[in-house]
Amino acid sequence: MVPFSAVLPEKNQTSLLFIMTSAFWMAVATFIGLLAATELIAPDLTRGMGWLVFGRLRPIHVNLVLFGFVTPGLLGAAFYYLPRLLKTEIFSERLGILTVVLWNLTVLAGGLTLAAGFSQGREYAEFIWPVDMMVVAVFGMLFYNFVMTVKQRREKTLYVSVWYANAAIILTGLTFALGNVVWRPTSGALTGIPDAILLWFYGHNIFGLLLTPLAAGVAYYVIPRACRAPLYSHTLSLLGFWSLIIVYTHVGTHHLLQVPVPTWLKVIGVVDSVGMVIPVMAFLINIWYTARGRLGEVHADVSAKFVFTGTIMYFFVSIQGSMMALPDVQRVTHFNNWVVGHAHIGVLGFAGMIALGGIYYVLPRVLDRPLYSRFLADLQYWLVLIGVTGFTVVLTIVGLIQGQAWLNGETVYRVLPEIHVYYVVRAALGAMIFTGALIGLYNVLRTLFFNTGEAAS
Image (cartoon, rainbow, N blue to C red; front, side, top):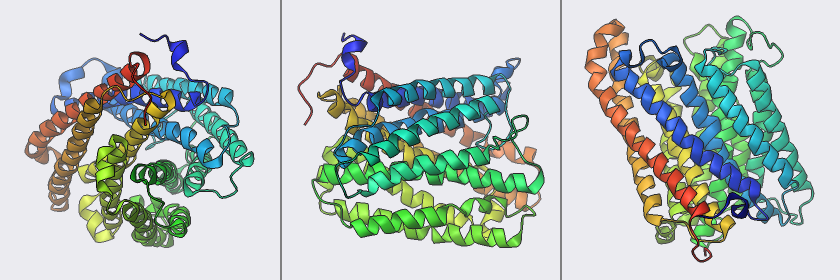
């Protein structure tokens, strides 16, 4: 076994630590999700254990996936590709390591406080004020490290991955502070309709201005490298970038079409949701045309396989999202499991798969030795892919059953027996994803501490 002090290379320490963070919290987050899914089958499973009731497990699961698994995985890749694209070193490796330490303390504090019942009670903004300020601090540290790295670059041209990574950190730092109303420590919220508007401005942008740009940045780096081909169009990549920043920022109001918010704001939310076809297709055409005729190379590289699959998931989640924003469709699909399935495609299917691809691309190159097991990486790929695809099918069916029943005036309790079997299938699929997370963690740890193979190609 290799001692930990010998594992960390002289360079890329921040990247490696973010990768380890992501692999660990993925296992924890998916276990919490599996436990929550099991409670939907057997609600009395945690009777008398207040810190394990569904109302606490659900926000813990969501926040651990967002901030524990997906974002660190994407950041681990970003800290690897930024210095290479800019032909320089990361501005401060020491600051990066400190950021990782504070990041893990933040995720731990957030999970423990939510389990203890301390919550702001707002979607995706459940963390209490002290944890919010820790999040703001880590994004401030990331911002400084990224911007100063760009400032000291020796490469004049900024490749699109650099644009995406920096935009994600800058914009998320701002929207997080706004959405969590950090200037009101006692409540973390405004009152009435303004709070709902501000909340969903943040709630949707945690995906649109954090996970999406970071994932796009990884895809724009990994796919051309794996295919050994230049990016299809740099101009198209910038069109996708700027249209994403302009259009995605305003789509959050489509969550509030049944709420008395101003009509003009609803119209903007619906129109921009449909307009998302522009940045989405600009990105996908660019990636897919780069890989055109080279799918053999994509399949041969397990990291590229994860990333390319993530782009396919992005197509499905984006088309579904634009459709769900239409008022006539939303009358059936809102406030039920359709939305839960949609979220799983986006966070796990798109951003999560690309994060895993980034991990498997960076890890052997940082350590200068091959991945411990390609077989285990492929096994994890199929477990996660089958799990998220199954989630999509099962939760879409359940959502349509619930939506049609409630549209026709049925009460909630009469629908529950009908959807119980789907919840059983959902938990089984969750067990597959949790198994995949454990396999991935094992693969990462074996590569780190026990693998002494030859240098990776």
